[in-house]
Amino acid sequence: MKKIVCFFPGQGAQYEGMGRDLYEASETVRDIFVQASDAAGRDLKDLIFNGSEADLKNTDNTQVAVTLVSAAAHAVLAERGLLGSNETGGGGGAEPVYAGFSLGELSAYYAAGIYDLQTLFTIANMRGRLMAKAAAEAVASYGSLGMAAVIGKSFAEIEAVIRESGLAHVYPANDNGPNQVVVAGVEQGIQQLTELLKAAGTRRIIPLKVSAPFHTPFLIPASEEFRELIADFTFADPVRKVYTNVTGALVASGAEAKENLVRQQISPVRWTTLMKNIAGSGEISVCCEAGPGKVLAGLWKNSGSDAVCRPAGTVNNIAAMQESINS
Image 1: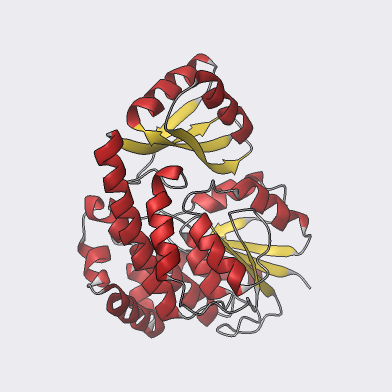
Image 2: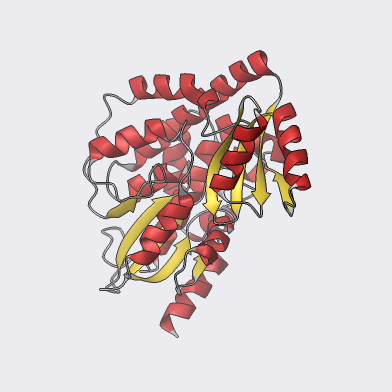
C-alpha cells in the first residue's frame, strides 16, 4: 500500500502571523492553541499573530510556536482526510509516515502516537527554554555564536575543511542534502570558515534566522538537563512509522524516541540519510510539509524520489494538495 509522508519543519521556518488562516478555519486548531498556551504558560496566539520577528527568533519562543503551527497544520490535514488511516484523520487508504527536522521531530513523535498533545507542547516549551539558557551561557563563555547554510559542499567535505583548518568551536550541524550543509559555532570561526570555503569555490553561504548553535557540543548542558526532566514522561512505542534525524532510521520504540530527543540537541541532523531511506522504501506516493515554510519541500527534491513534496502549512496549501490528490 502506498503511503503519505508528512514532514515537520524546524527552527528558521517561523514568520510573523503564521498559522492565522488555520486558526480561523478550524475549531480544532483553536482548541490546540488553547492547549499549547496552557502548557507553555503564556499566550501563544498573541505571540505568533502579534509578536515581532525578533520575538519569534528567540528560541525560547520559536520552538513552541513552530511546534504549535505544525500541530495545527497536521490537524487540518487530518480533518480534510489527507492522512489516510491516521486515527485523527479520514479515510483514503494511505498509511502515514512521519519525520521531523530537528525541532520538528517532536511533532513527528506526537503524530506517530508516541505521546499526547499536552506532552508535545510541554517538552517543546521545555526544550526551547533549556536551549536558550545553554546558548546564553555559551555566548558568555565564547562570544557571539550562530549558524549558516553552505551551498555547494557535502557534509564530508565541510568536515574535512574544518578538520584541516584547525578551526576551534565550529561544527557541521545539519546534513540537509548532497550539496547543502549548515555549520554552527562561534561567529569569528564561521567567518574564517566562510573565507576558506569561498576560496575553495563555494557558491553561497547564508546566515540563518536562529539564535543558537544547535546540534553542537555547545548544547550539552541543555541536553543533560532535558534528559533529567523528561525521564518520567511516558513515551509509548510508535503506532505509525516515524524516522529520526539523529540517524535517519526508523524509530522502533518509545525508549529509543526519548533517547533520540536528548541526543539530537548535540548531534548533527542526518536529513540526507533520512530522505534517502524514506525514498528508498518505495512506499511513498504523497509527500507534504506540515507547518510554516517550505524548506523541507525544497530539500526533498534531492531525495531521489519521484514523489513531489508539497507545502502544507496554510489552508490554501492544503486545499491545493487535496485538489492535486483528487485530480
